[in-house]
Amino acid sequence: MIRSVAHEVNRLEVAAGVPYGEFRRRYERAVPAFDADRFAELQRAGAPWETVRRATEESAPHGFLRYWGFDVTPLMNLAGDRWNCVEYLMGDHTTAQRMFTRDPAVMLYAPLRTAIYEDAEGRTWFAVDQPSTRFASFGDAAIAAVGVELDHRLAALLERLGAPVPEVLGQRE
Image (cartoon, rainbow, N blue to C red; front, side, top):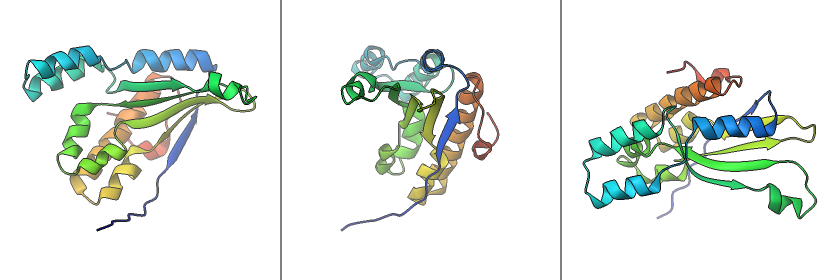
């Protein structure tokens, strides 16, 4: 069996309005790194999900954690490209679980992939696919609702970072 799902996704590119290094530092402060050791200990202890949920809330004060990051700049400099770019995976595993329990394929889009980069004019940009447009593709109202919730959380994060908030993200939480 093969399934093919065509769907439209909004890629949001937001001008940061500040230099690359400053915006990257703001982002990394607002979206802390996932503490794998802390959560591995909860796993070893067989912690109940409520404990994991509380630990996640404590770890992600603005609703997101950084699970991975890669500064592509040094590698791309070898090809002669001179602008800065870093990519990340950011999310919240307890929010992802609310979708995962309905369809494990949501992990294609959770965590969210983001990038901070400079363009040819030296402007700094933050890019991410709009969560609700990714998760609506599953045809499940509960998953789609979490996508909208993530839109709102993303809007709040952008506001926290001092960046413009795209209207398509709707109300902030």
